[in-house]
Length: 301
Image (cartoon, rainbow, N blue to C red; front, top):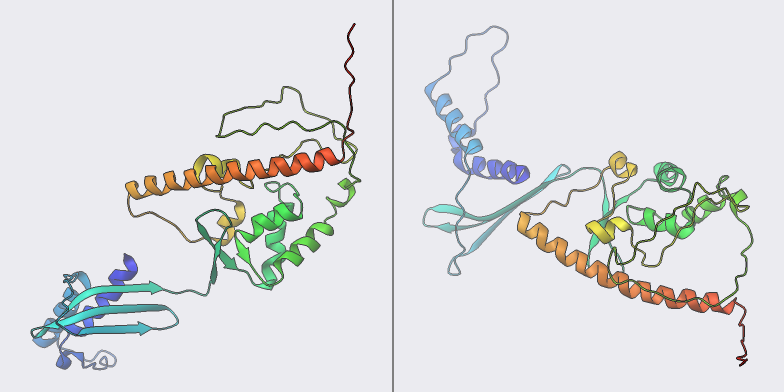
């Protein structure tokens, strides 16, 4: 609204000030006497009125020609659509937006009908971002795919995947904890939940000792969605979001917010159930391929 008002003021200032009032005179030098004439007062009043009042928008008429006024610079862009009705030019719609040196890229995630804005990151800030998305306590030194997913949701630069993979491979904290995969026995039994809190599991032991692989907790991921997305319909804000900033996505009204949230949660839950089913089947196939198939013979006493 502030940007629209700024362009609106300029738009009507150009039309409300008379041509004879556009003359600019240099300021008097030193302590020279200068008289504020009546025509100056009228010019100032008309300029003040143009800056403080809003135009009344009119409906478009198909029998009249449309007039499109545009203005663009390195600091902002603006446009106004109007029609000349009688001797007066009436505004139908207007738009303006201020520009900065920050570039964003529209990114659409697979399977979810939503999009996010990626910050186009310069090469000089890549190490700082990777430290925040991989090395920081809030990220916990996750693997390549997890770090790449969280980084790609927020930032974009050339060869992002290669840089993330190289960063995780050369991480001194992650290197000593990597070890060979261990084979398991027994076939996997599936149980897929259908909604949040349908089944709740609690750890009643702890803290657990660090294993030989350097782990003291286990991560489970099947739906590719965080608990915050499943419950609140959005991801939690990270320190890097505050540090680098993100565009606001404020709804126009509470009703629109509730409607969008309900649709987003419904879509996320349906997507999570489908992903959970596919992931569980894939994990069972992989798990059973490494398991020992025990055959039991029934005997009667």
